[in-house]
Length: 212
Image (cartoon, rainbow, N blue to C red; front, side):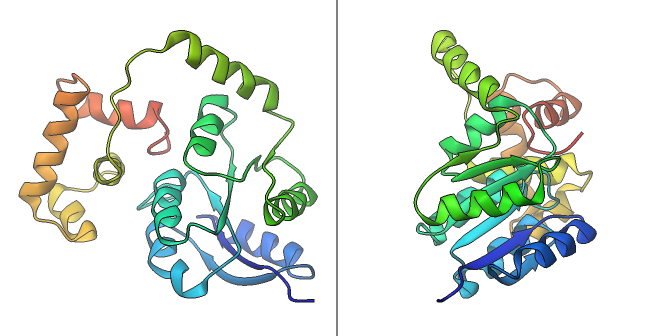
């Protein structure tokens, strides 16, 4: 029987190696990546059935990478792996097309189970946060407050700025002009009603666009 093709992305190489060793007897691990941008650039040619993504990755975080991957590979299942127990983050991941959401503190066997569930079209959320996640959905419905949604490109610019890169460096990574990067930065500040670059970085941390 043909084994499912799996891609793993996490910025901790030791963890990547451990997951690969654990999953390989059952699945075919066809690629491993240490940042979201390299994952997005290479995933299409690997045509995986499932991609396991860490949310807090450099260059492009897992949620932004997942959005890109869903555009390029709509049939591929995405399973998010994170240390963040925030149920709002889990809710956001599923809104963006996730099939699974696990904490890194979960047992490795739980990851294998989540992959199996995704392959047969089901969703899986670790029991460690399910209760909070339901509450998060309910609270969001009650609040119904207007949200200032950043575009995918704005999130990419913001993550790189929050990682400490200059506008010139951000422009080089995203293949833009520094002027375009500046435009995105000040548009975001205006949208979010923020006065300083420091407030914009704090926004990125609070909303898990970049790790604290």
